Image 1 (cartoon, rainbow, N blue to C red):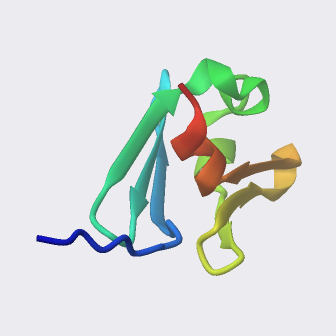
Image 2 (tube, rainbow, N blue to C red; image 1 turned 45 degrees about the vertical axis):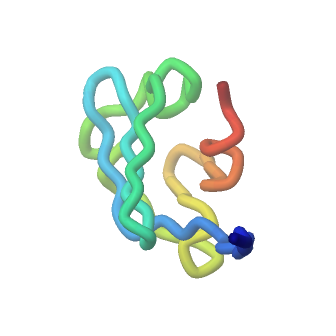
Length: 80
């Protein structure tokens, strides 16, 4: 029996912020949820500002222009 490793780059497809978490849905079906206090700019933002995001790099990252905040999907997966 052999196991094959496939290198798949995680891509975001949707983003949501609650009062205490950043939630990111990935193209491969996984979902990431991390504490919002990891990102002070997002934590201090209004709900309207948190909703004003766009995907960058084809889903490799998330950008909040008004907050000057960028979040890498790969880094979210590496946080412990």
